[in-house]
Structure formats: C-alpha cells, structure tokens
Image (cartoon, rainbow, N blue to C red; front, side, top):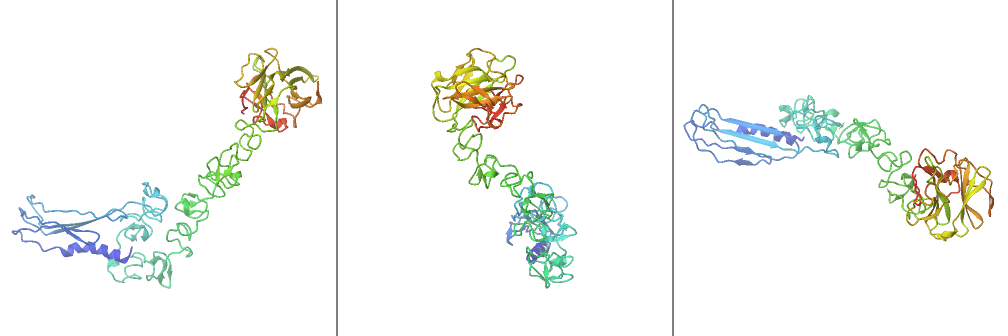
Length: 517
C-alpha cells in the first residue's frame, strides 16, 4: 500500500471528529443532517429534520464505521436522523459516516477455485486470502508479509492498520523512509530508502534503496513460489521446489505445495507425454481424439494433424483388425491376392458332434470360379482321405463371399453359399492330429493341420503335400467338447502362411460371417 493510501485512511478516521459543530442550544430548533463520505472525496448532504426534541440533549455524537471486505471499491451510504420519541435522552446532532468497501474475492492467478473454496490451502495465509495467489486479507486476517493485507500492514502475523506514527507523513522513529521501513511500519515500495532487505516490499535493498523484484535476485518475491521461479514471470520450478499451482512447476505437478516428478498416473500432461498420461516413449499409447506427435503415440498407430484417430479402411496403414494395408478383417474389403481360404472350423461340439462346419472365404474383391475345387478331409491315422466335398456345382464364389460346409439342416445367413455333408453327425475328425485341404486346378490352395503336424499327405490328383503352413499350430490351440467355440483365422481372413500366427481358438461361432476373437 502506498503512503498516499495510508494518509487517506488516517484522514478518514480523524476528519469527522474535527468537523463536528458545537452542541446546539437545547431550547432552539435543531438542524440535524447526515454527512456521508464517499471514496471519491465528495460529500452528500441530507435535508435537516425540524422536529424538536422532547427532552434534554447530550453532547453530539459522531460515529465513524469502516467496513472492509476485498478489492472492488463500491461506496455504500447510510443516513441517520434524530429520533425524537425517546422519553429520556435524545442526541440532537448525530453524524454517521459509513465507508464500505465491497470486494469480490478473486485470485490473481489461474486458481480462482482455490481462492474461493472456504479453506486455507495453497499459499494462502488465511482462508481464501493472502499469499502470492489470492487477494489480500482484511484487517484481522492472518499474514506473513505486508503484501498479504489489504491495509498493507502485517503486525504480529495479523493484518491491521499500522501504528499512528506510520501515518503521520514524517520520517521518524525507526522508519527508513516516510511512514515505511523499520520494525513497526509497513515495508517500503521500490525506490524508497531502506537499511535491510526486510524494509522493502521486494525484500531487495541495494545501496540503501529498495529495488524491484526480479527473477535473478536470489529472493522469493513478487509472484514467485520459490527462489526466482514460479509465478507468471519467472521460469518454472524444478522438483522439490515450493509451488502454489501446477503451473509453477516444470513437471506440471504440484502436490502439497511441492513440485513433484512427472509420472504416467498423475493426471497431468508432463514429461514426454503427448496428452494426459499417454503418448511418448514411457506412457501407454493414446486413444482416438488424444494429442500425438507420431503414429507411435497412438493405440491405433495413426496420428493425423497431431490427433490420434481410429483406423479406417483408407488411411494407407495396416491397423485395427486389417490383415493388410486397408483390407481384410471384419470391417474392410477382402485383400486382393489372398484368394480362397479355409477360414473357420468347428470340428468338436458339446456332447454329440452334430453341429460341425467348415467355412471358406473368398478374400479377393473378384469372383472365383469353383470348377475343380474340392475340400478334402484327411485322417491323421495313416494320412488317409476320409471325405471329399466337391465345390464345382456352386459355379463360383463372389469377392468377399462366404461358403459353409455343414449338415443339411444347418442354417446359414442369407447370401452365404452352402455345401451339405452326407449326414448329420461325426462328419469331421477330432484330431490328434487331423487335417483339411482345399484343392483346385490340381494344386493345394490352402490347408490346416490341427492338434498335431501332418506334413506328408498324398492327395489324389495333387500328390504329396504338407498340411502345415509355416509354424505348426500349437496342440493347445484346439477345438473343445467342453467349451463352445471353433478354430478361426484372426484377424478374419488373415493368411500369412504361418498357422501359429493366423489361427486362434474363439468362443464366438460365426459361420458365414466375419470371425471375432
């Protein structure tokens, strides 16, 4: 608070007493009026009352009431007239000067909620006031520095007016400049005289003059939360330094008024994260809509315009459940060049095997003629063929179309081709091992060896072939007679020529539809 403010405050205290008129004659008419001070120095007069008192009048009473709440100055006037109905004593002249300063409690930084939460927290010196973040405290509030107080004076850790000697416009007692400095008066503003740092609001006294706070003065001052860091002006503070808000910290984390290290669980974007607790080299990948820098920051491996986006079938990348770039899987078109594949097999059912099926899929966008195409079932005991199912009568299979081989009563979705088994039960061997071959044009097109490896199989019209593609399917990846499920290519239609990669057990039966885990 400036010296002018102190002097104005003092003047408001003494002016009414000095200007009271002498007591009026008790037998004469009383000119009773109310003078109201406003903050801009004007006077408002109220017309005098003319009703005479009914009894003796005592000395005139001057009442000055000052109420201070916060930063917004809004004059409030009050009028008091003489009450002549009192049967004992009446004051013929009453002057009430009321100065009320209303203030909305607000924060000087980006933490308005903390400064209005009804609690003493952060860097506050009292509830919702004081410290570097919130508005100064009213008289009676707790304080540490003069700047914590609306009055600009913190005496014995309590806000209030300074001693009268600090309002007399003179440099006296221990003051280092007029009405400031020393052990009793408020600290001095910049450019005023000082003897020690504590004489200055900035806490910096150089060559007996108070110097403005800076971010290189080795003192906590201004809006800093620690020595030369924090606030809106200085660099952010490092881990272990004091802080008032997360913005004071380089890590973006302020816990119990101490800057804390960044982590992937602190609900703040810090460290190398590209969004809150995700992205970068250390945290989990970000979801769709989160910020990113590279594709590697995103769970779906796609960062566009610094935002993670979900996979699409035209983004130029293999992502989501695609089996190749922008094709395959349950959502995109079948990939060209894969051709016709064995896609799903349910060879073992609960109780009686009466719901077995084999599903084929044309993974290309084009129709495939089925003339000369057959599905051959091979028994692992002796590698002998035990069933051959001719696909030729179907003519062709459209691009992306499914074909199901099952018992005659088995129902398939509309648009799905179907070939019937010759019978209803036990049409597919249960393995250890057994195999399925898809042949066409005198060649092996696709194959599956399950519950073991079948590498030397002699198929009529084809010759000796292996039913194992790449790495043999592990024996524990098998159909079950205790759990409903099937063996399926996952992602749907995926054919990398490696059985252990392409085939999985799934509890979701999808004959004539895209496979799902």
